[in-house]
Image 1 (cartoon, rainbow, N blue to C red):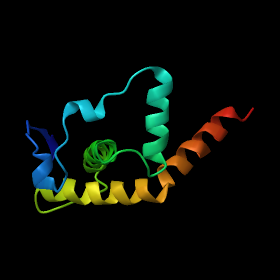
Image 2: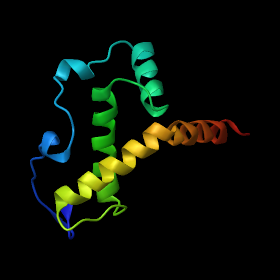
Image 3: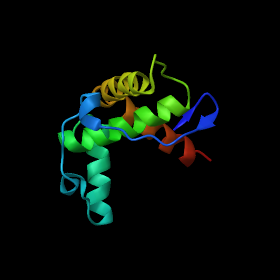
Length: 108
């Protein structure tokens, strides 16, 4: 983790952050089209609970690194980021942003 400008190792317990345990097999994708469908579903606020939660956790870590979430502790900041990411995913705003980016990139 990067905290106060210093890199330090950290071990996170997803369950301590309020996430549900899921086996790795619950996150397994497949061929490109299947993975595309999974990503589309998650970004649209759908997908399985395991898929939604792993994306929210990864987004929370990015929000922490980008200093968009703060907290008294690293875990508190990550928990705040998870909540924010889950709200964004549930609203479909992540999908809307991706579609806006695709449209922008296709402009002449």
